[in-house]
Amino acid sequence: MDTRVGGHLSRIRRPLFFLLSVGLLAILLWKAGVWTILGILRESNPSWLLLAMVFYLAAFVGRTFRFRCLLRQNRAGFHRLWQVVCWHNLWNHLLPARTGELTFVYLIRQRKLDTAVSSLSVLLVSRVIDVITVLLFLTVGLLVRPVNVFGLHPFLLWLLAFLTLISLSGIMFRFSSLFAWLAEKSGPILRILRIDRISDKLQEAASEFRRMESGGVYRSGFGWTLVLWAFQFLTFYALMLSFGVFISLWAVVIGSAAAALASFVPSATGSFGPLEAGWALGFALVGVELRLGLATGFAMHFVVLGFSTAFAASALLFSVPWPPTRRKTG
Image (cartoon, rainbow, N blue to C red; front, side, top):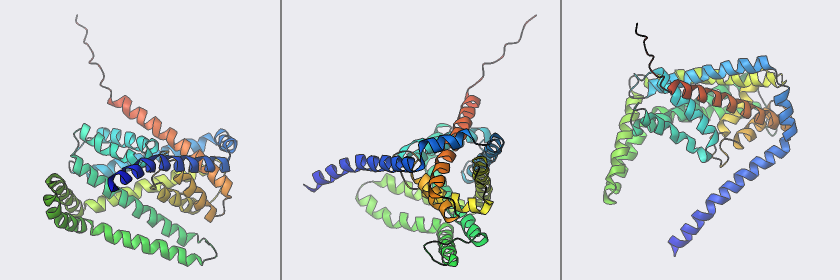
């Protein structure tokens, strides 16, 4: 009876999740105004858009070097890993419930750049470093440009962000020990359940985390993450200028950092919905009107999706083998 009820609830949960995600997206589009979004895109400044694309390209380069130094087989050619980064980023925008993340593992294995366990471990570490880096930029932004939330003193919001940053950093640098402990404790239980393969994979993952923790791999990964997020925030700044919203760089950092953190929330509509909601709320903190924040959030998302599509197309073009040239004989 319990099994039947659980199966029935599981069948209901998926369409309910889809309907809630679509409903949130529809409400946000209605509040922003489709014609307002189209107007922002139509009247955007092409010079600032081009600069934003250059910044976004630099962020992709930083992302590629970040994965190159974290993966076990870090001698992989840049252009092969660049293709993985371009396609992984595009699918992350399109596939629901963060399932686009799994394309990284698939593409790494397909190109024989590393194992599935290693690539999955690297992806998990990368996402934790991403959150830490975004929080770092956010804490600096809140220090430079204090904001008032619900009448609270600006220092309290900064303190909350700072404590969260310190906590996550502490977990990050003890991640391998925590995971090794989990793998060790769960091993006997998994063997009793006769799923030794999972226990072996956990041990392999623990070994990967220990490898990344030693030899300065974490430091190199964190350094490249700082670089890529610096260019990511410059991308958002250039886009806001192209949309005619003239605010300071640190105000953009605060608003877009809130959007970046919200984008980790799973949604059935790809990355649409939570990102725009986080963008609007983040920019509302720095004085941007909520409707304009939503409209620029959607406009930003469409532009960035266009950039990602162009980069993915270029990666596909470079991955197609060219036919050998025939030499003319006398």
